[in-house]
Image (cartoon, rainbow, N blue to C red; front, side, top):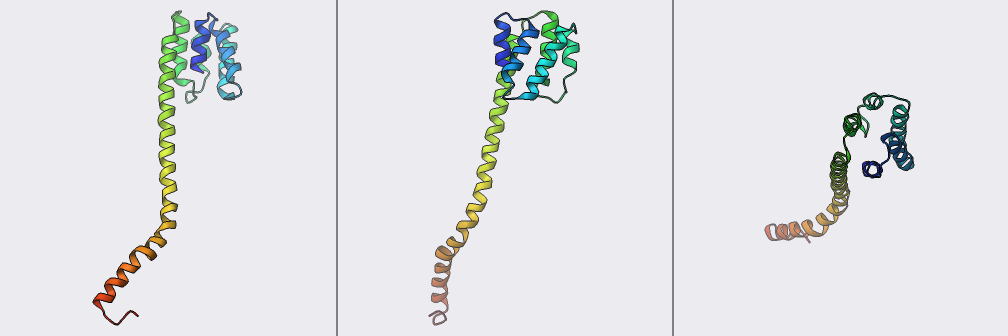
Length: 144
């Protein structure tokens, strides 16, 4: 989403049109983010300052990390493309780390039941014959 927004701004779209276009593009994947982007675009189009437009977003949403940056960059008239690229890279690395953590957790959760399935076989085929052999040698005549 941030890469799309950076591309739209690089193409020369005004901020509110870029936000609306990106909102339309991400609608199938993330309707909440799309609605937030279109809401901010509508507020800016109606005359709200960028800071006022972004202020209405929930502080815990996925756009919270970039909302203040976009508000400052839009109001100051500066370019936010490099900041958007940096934020996009950071969000991708966080998503990759979260995916790796979920994969590792799944591997641990799979190993438990697998171990419980193989433990009886290991005891019957590996430990009991050794114990029986030792017991036969130590206690002659007890085992047939």
